[in-house]
Each structure stands twice: as structure tokens, then as C-alpha cells.
Image (cartoon, rainbow, N blue to C red):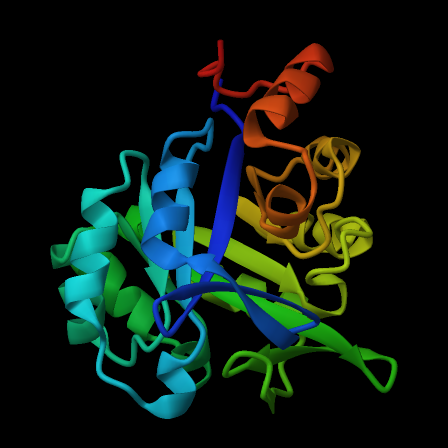
Length: 253
């Protein structure tokens, strides 16, 4: 049976790990490489690193840093941010990432998923979908929360699956950094429409929140604030979940 995963998402800005709330008020938390080393020594199953500035600044991919990150990560490593074309994705994978996460470019060229999938296989592609409620309707949002798209997140998840992604990372902007729990209603609606693995992000504040998400059949939970600002740990999460019959990797002692 496939095991459920605990995945920290690390937001990268100017060599620092940053955190915020609802995609705003972001502040420096720690040095990025130091944070990566700390997480790698803990009981995480994967890591997601997202450069939150590269797309909006139209910056060149920092492949040297991606290589440095990969050398210090012993678990599967997903990188996202600033990937604008097929070549960018390949460069990131060649620099040591196991998977690429694509967000903003999906709204310009959804076929980038198919192009990468045909070359590397769908297992290396994560479609990242940020969404929020605007005037009573859920809409996708790109460019680190700065550009509202007209796409409905559920329909867009279906399209990304059709175009060849291997996983979908869904992030509720309204819950990001709040530690008030995942958007279970949206999880249920998306799970009813797609079959690829779902990673859910935005809102984890307790082990119970993770349990609730797994009971809605997601493949992985992404969390950050809970590990940065509370005494709760990936090890504690796994023990809690294991005791409640969630099939997690038993890497702790």
C-alpha cells in the first residue's frame, strides 16, 4: 500500500526561508540552506522548495542554488518558481531536483505539462494550483498571489491531469499561514474529479488537521508554519497518524 507523505514547503526569497499569511506580510525566518539541512535530518518524506520571487521578477533560474539544495536533501526534492518553458524544467531536473512544480506558466502554456511528461515521465511534474474565494467564487491565482485567473480550481485540476501532470499541489491562499485547518470541502470536491495524487497545502496547525486531510484520501500533506512556529514536529505527526491507522513511513525511532 502506498504510504501517506509529510512534506514541508519552504518558501525561498533572497537566500532566506520566509513565511507569511494569505500570501502577504512575508518575513524572514531563517537561512534557506540551514533550514533545508534541519528538515533533512527530521522525519520528512519529501521537500518542496518554491522561489516566490523569480516569476514576478522575471529572473534567471538560480541553478547553482538548486544544485546546492539537492546536495543537502536526501529525500525527494521538488523545485518550483520561475519555470517558463520546457528547457527550464529540464535544467532544474538536471540540477538535482527530482520533480518540478509549475504554477504561473500553466496559464500561459498548459501544454508544458504534456511536453515535460513525454520526455521525463509524469512522475517528475507537479501542477501547483493556488486558489482563493473572490466575490463568492473560487478562482485560481498565479504569480505568488498577485494575478487572479478566471479558472475554477476544480476544473483546472481536471485539465492539468488531462495534460499529463503526475501530481497536483493545491494551496488555499485564504488559509495559508493561518494554522486553522485545511480546506476539506475543496479537497473532497477535487478528489471526486481527479485520480492523480493530491498534495494539500494551506492551513495545517495541528496533527488533527493532517489526519482530517488524510481521511479525505489525499496522498500528502504540505505544512510549514506548524513546524516553524510551534513545538509540533514531523516525527510527532507521524506517531500521531500511525496511532490512528494512517499508513505513514515509519522512519522515526
